[in-house]
Image (cartoon, rainbow over all chains, first blue to last red; front, side):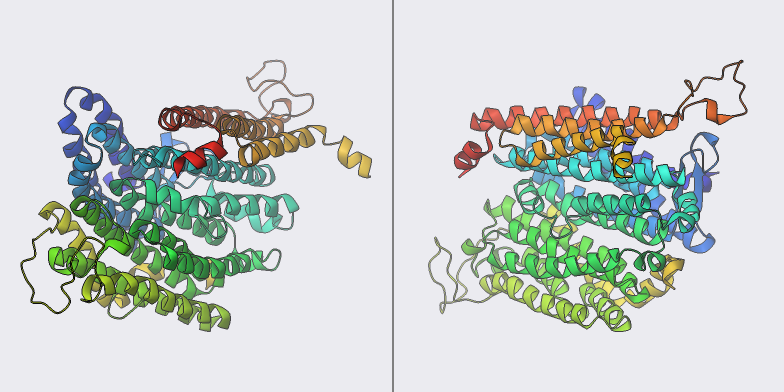
Length: 503
Length: 123
């Protein structure tokens, strides 16, 4: 009974409280946070059970309203969807624990709408993962996008402008996706993903099908911030409040990447597609641009959150590279990088949030070595996150890049291999710029006196409070644990996800 | 052949034109309200596209008519795209609403809705 309903359960655990919070919050604003946290915490066991059930017994499908699949709307949990749903639940739970204090510092008057929007965003994300219907996916995409615009707009003085730009470009993206879906619907007569996948091989030579695919990929590329469609991302992520950007940056673009995987590898057959339009190669080459551009721009930023935002552009490039290679190992690398990047970006954005709350800023130029003693644990998390971004073993980031490189070798894409390694080098440069300021004694902050060769002196402890520190450290520890268990993860969890078209 | 290609697809040409007008408005106009107008034109063109693909010649509304029978779907236009577009219209209205809310918030902070002036005042 419960098992058959699994695909719908996670989106509903978010959706229903999302609607309840504004109603209850009207009377008791204090109830918003416990309700939101309870919903997110409840989703973890459900999503975990879903993943366990799917790995053990194959995909679970649920037909809405009892209408059978090609006519009605189908919700499907397959290994990829259930895995990413669990990822969304876990990361959002940790971010919400962290967000409580950040919200009360950054925008205490807006906490009720904030928590409601967060749950709407998550409902949209999990709906996108679970749905098996192309149009339904559009609806969930818009739910998460609208919530996302609101979450960005809560931030500082500039944030409505960034949110407005995000809204205009996001609407272009979802509009293109909708138009592409229309093309596919006209040609195949179906909106159910499995049904469309069955019909497509017969009509793949029709120009409207390919035009529809290109429209869909362009639209989702905009939402994923795939280079060169990334220009909304740095503004949106850096002017959003820390509590929102810690959710949007690790999860938002990953969901876009998931939709790309779903369309390119499950609805369409990448092998058959490659003979007609080289769309995976185009994505791979654009991703090369993304890795280099994002890393170089990150190197030039003076503010930690903005640097992390540009670094996101680069990391999406890695995911795009893995997809674009269209080899099994490249696919494994891409999925593993979705997981790792979600965790490392969440950890790093939480560190940025800690800095903002404790110091009031996150300017790299104003950091100096006292920080390593004022906030030792946050800075340790920063180092672990940075090492993982660079890709040093035994952190998780090493293994996704390892699989990406293996995928490149498997497909003899030597340029891609070179770019992945070069990207790692650039990562080293822009993260060590920060780490060196924090740990080496010869940097002075603009206000601080030099303490280069003096004793340790008395340094006040400005570490973040426990509710903020714990999620940061759990995420940092998860990066190490996932690194050590990555072979188990790849063999048992990610391997069943590889689409039949790639093997 | 070429005349046929243009004349035979009148509706689709108009829809494409609307789509381009909308995109131009969203991306090239400097006034933020005009961008939102462009967004609406863009979304309307997509809605019209769906409505257009649903129609058939010599077909009627999709309510079963005793005279036509329920056997041959060629007598009825396809109702699915219409229902899809009801959802899309709701989404479009919601997006417009959020857009206007953001515009009000921008205007309160910067006292302008012109992008160039806005960029100057943001510095």
